[in-house]
Image (cartoon, rainbow, N blue to C red; front, side, top):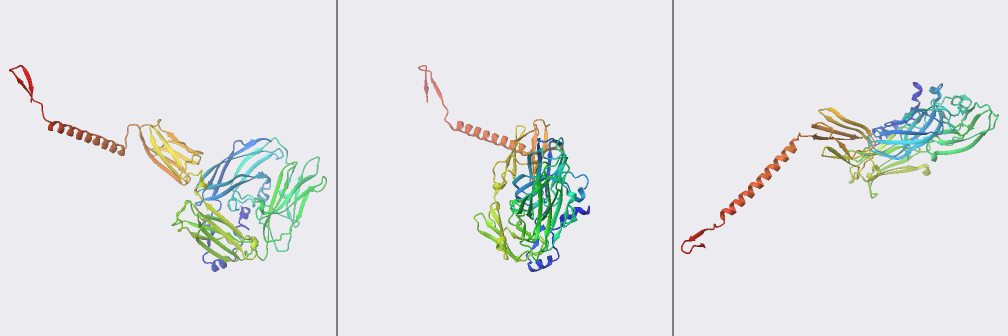
Length: 532
């Protein structure tokens, strides 16, 4: 559907008309998408039940999969709780009821899967109806990897369930009543962009279907760019709708700086309801250059082929201020090993600079740093540093070793630091005989210390264990069949023992042959015995 393509506007591709200018001026610039890929983190979460009552605990459980070829640091899993809009979803989306953080500070190796569980309460002020949890993956630095919480219905995954035996949704922000400057506005439409000096009037109805009405109180907020981060909060204010008044909220906000803004509304009683909407303002120039991602192409790195990179773009239709971008590769001790700097008033096209890692002597311990110096407004400069250390991935499987004894296969698993790890996620554990599956287990949340094979018939087998980008194959035998190595070893032992026995026999025989013999003469004259 055409409306679903709204996600292309005002984020990564806000202005292509001057792309050639920046690339012509800075030939070392690269396409960011040579390194960064959006939407390659998958969220597969479920609930234990399909229906819940007020006060019940909802456990969400499942996996998060980093399908990227690069590692992710300090990842946040965020969620919107939405009540299904049965009638006008295509135009205005679902009804937002709550939002919360499921997990923080997660680190993923390339292709790694992690288990996730989260418990929240179905509150008494949640209205009844069909619900959907929508998930978003971003870093603590604001880098979006899958789903964007500031855009309607752009998510990394969903979980559906039902809320029953609770309050009727009599009070809620009516997504069908949104207007801008007196004109009807659809929520799932192109983001409205206002000219410099224009201050939009946003109005929305707070639907109140109660027979006996009372005052309604709530809060509205304005955020720059993304409402998932409280540090982006620009303005907040309380509101009260007195009983009997027309329940329409209207606000005029001075969009001082060019860029994107999120307008946010919230009430908690008698029924919880949230609403948010994104708009943007043009200007002569964006106020800052936005960093899209800072990372490396793999970990542990191969210094001969991997690279460090930083991606950036102007977050407005206009160019960013004159900005000096410096990307540095640092040793564990902080010494600058490699560095690259570009300077320009960059456009809205998402560009990157990168560095080789050939000067790294330690492929596990090092840092990369991006420094954005805003040369027109130094107070809006930004610096970000990523320290890479094997301990960031303590629960990530790096190597598997096996040992087969007495009908059991023992598994020893280690992380990048060489320490034992037991909690890594195993996608599959399969035993084959002649390419036929004999035993299989999938989606294990811990690594078994041993695998029992005593119930297998005699013969040759192959064990396959897969966890992320690590796949281990081990051949073993059960019963009286011996492989060639075992036969050769036993044959060698028999020959060696026989050789040692032969040597010992020869030595003893030669000693006895060389020793003098005892002779005895009988003297018949006196009946005695004389020894010579």
